[in-house]
Length: 419
Image (spheres, rainbow, N blue to C red):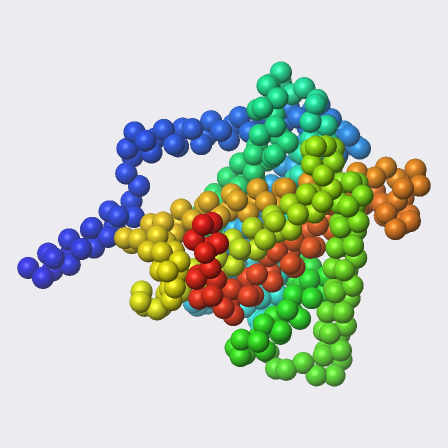
């Protein structure tokens, strides 16, 4: 009798996680596929009008190829993270012979603090790739005709960027994350994954993101939580090299912020082109607003997974904290995956908006270069990659670190419940 009861409970739990194909569910699947196809078509058509930065400065085929390659690489970056974060409990000897390249990935990633280094480098790579997609597929002139579509449709799918958000999230992130979480060992058993891992490690080694470590140390001291490390304390040259890169990173971050703020206040960004009715001061506000949205969503993910391990009565210590937990962990926690999908869409949407805000609209060679820099440097800044540096450090990693130090505080925040 007891066995039958246990079996019933297990079956009931399994059923609660199965997707039942109701008419509404089928409609959502069909609508999602149709929306994805429409987004690909309209963005592709935009590229061939040569109304994107890359298409204008090279040609439409280059823009299309770079955009496709960026989405493919993003799919590997996102899937590889799911694999490497999930594999540590698995004994590497179990797949050493059957999946030799997975073993090489794991041997490098799980050595010392390399997994943390990879995650930091990978975070910047995600932002960089999204900014590249924006330059390949984001419109320069909102008035250019695309497939004869109404202005309202163009505004939503192209100017705001819903089309880019849809195909980037579905093809480059959500699908590959799900596949990699189910096939962790198989997904990274290739040289593409190994190459991506080396690039992420190289990005971290460069020191561009090292100001995040300063923030980590400050939060550790403030919260009283030690920084857990699998390596001995830094001494001598290692110590000097580490903090030297921190200082360099702070200088790079300061320069990127200066470029962005000066350009915004002078009306020299793509915001002035796409949305000429927005005052410069409002553009500055929107920049920090969407950075805060990204930060909150990044922090919420960390906080939710941290409190998921706690007993239900310890998860929230305020009215909004308890309301958030009741909503998130309702039933068998079905709302958590829904939050993760909605969060991914909102974060990428904010990434594209920040990319548009930080992209400069200064023509090199006319004497208007920001800070009087050379024409080549101005042409590079026009792509807005300095925005990727700012967003990675101030809107992503810093908030993740803060949520790790104070998960309950983020959970109790009313903004968390609203988002």
